[in-house]
Length: 248
Ligand code: COA
Image 1 (tube, protein in one colour):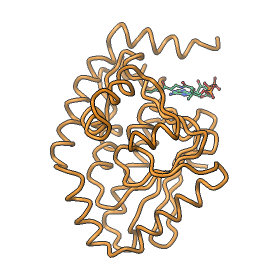
Image 2 (spheres, protein in one colour):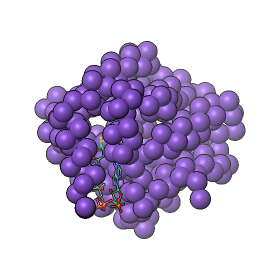
Image 3 (cartoon, rainbow, N blue to C red):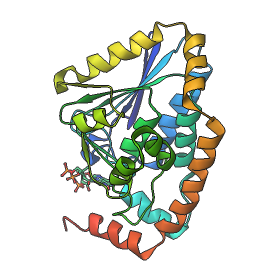
Image 4 (tube, rainbow, N blue to C red):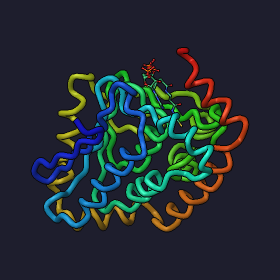
């Protein structure tokens, strides 16, 4: 099975992260697959909504930390990561997500680009960037303070305190919290509801609501610049080694 499964059903394209044995930690090829699926939908008039799902045991454990270690020697932030983040920002199709279990790092920040998020009761969102010696990414340092105010965004992005599904709803990231067994059907129903609306009116409304795409693109790049510097820092290297050695 591929680690990103893309399937089209009527007007809804589903992107499923499928690396459950690693809690859906994203590798460069997975970012590539997600970016391709989002970009590829742009040219398809028949596709009107994208649905991002993970696994029932975990939405996404963030960037693969082994890949981070490789980046510390290459000094480059993988191009597929930036491609994916820009694809999220530039998507003209509405984005819906279904989150169960842990959503860590980019697993949480990708949700800030979604138009509608359904969470299972056991969902837990967290962004331990700073504890890893890193800085926030995906324009989360711009979008999260706008969404929930500086103090709550600081708690999430800098202090790394997790948000339960209910807290994520209160913070404005999550729309609905449902029982785990109902998660995918509820998210699919929301995606179909959006897909049934007049698509050009949806696209125009989204553009008006999301603010300047160029500003978000610029912020993604500025964060990436800071992220590259942090990746090779002693703080980050020590944190990656601690994670990778934890079970040895
Ligand atoms: N990168 C690489 N491998 C990861 C990973 C990541 N981000 N997240 C999980 N894994 C791997 C674990 O090393 C483990 O591999 P193993 O079975 O070969 O030992 C496997 O996935 C299962 O993870 P495990 O930690 O045993 O599951 P858990 O249910 O106890 O905890 C998490 C789940 C998500 C809380 C925990 O794995 C975690 O904290 N992951 C790191 C998250 C992170 O910091 N991401 C980067 C954000 S910027």
